[in-house]
Image 1 (cartoon, rainbow, N blue to C red):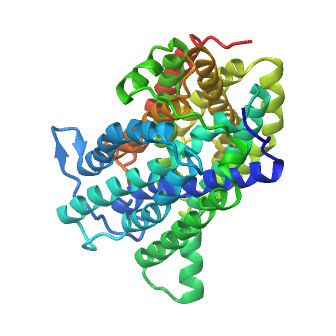
Image 2 (cartoon, helix red, strand yellow):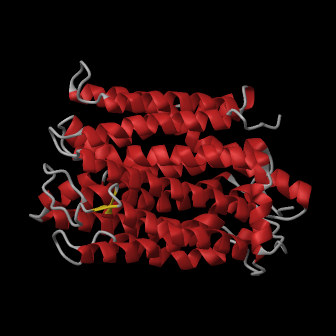
Image 3 (cartoon, rainbow, N blue to C red):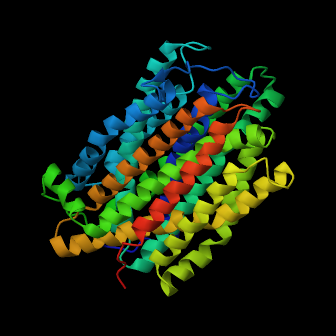
Length: 445
């Protein structure tokens, strides 16, 4: 049993770690396609060729997918190392601290191509630095999220701490999505003439800030004061297999994977939806993302209350249903009988509830699953459950970027936007699949 309960102030400090890696991962999701394959009204130049491989996959989609093959091996490996750790300072924080600097550097280098123009050399460079970023940020994320199950001891505590985590995550989403707005400020204040360089400076600043907030939990929380660490003795492969024997976890995992694939489609396409489908400036993308996140905060008390009254499962199913309708709206953006700005306001308003519910509840649900497994098996596999989850989250995010990049072949510019609209169709199908699988999940009362 833990020696102490985590006080409110340290719960907030713990959530800053989430905000840090959220900024960097959302920079990759939102800015990577826009930076390397920009629409022709962006003021940027394409950096990788739009070559098709096997008639369907363009180079950027293959690059985005390649880094996750490394994760497929590395995620469970770092989880196993963390679960088995006998470090006297704790199982999680001593590993996490080594990930911060490499993550900051690799995230920034993603947006420093070797050649300012279309080149296969840029494709090879991007493959290398993306792989470095994925490995670095995974070394932080897996132990960090395993702590959610260890620092909390009741379903209510899990929902509460998961809520603080989600606040950190959505703040990271806002800060990452405002990248173009920071670039505007850099150009106006410092007289930077090229948009390309202004974006690079903005990304460096955001990455460094991310690293600074990621180190706060390590500096101000003594893991051994709040967690009774019991290293697991199960070898790596049996530990992975044990997670998949849990039928509830399988349904959870499939739903979570399809949701993050759909969410990545939306995030990757945000700047395109704003600039191409609606004809608004790219800086509006960050503003709408910020508004959506702020509106989602209004639903947090309802989500916490509803989880107690009607259960987490029902709220998640409702959220998937609403999100599927939002993707239908994306297909018709720019053709609805409203002003372009009002169309985005409608989209943002309806997206705020799913963002709140699907941000808070899945981690709390998984912490419940991991804790129950620990009680039944006597082995602490929290890290492995979260490793498998985040492997599939990142696979979903990467497949989402890859699908978005592939669909740009069918149109990504004003007057030629069918590829962007197809994201609405694909997202709708994914959300319906997530809903159907999650109906099979059995929630413990």
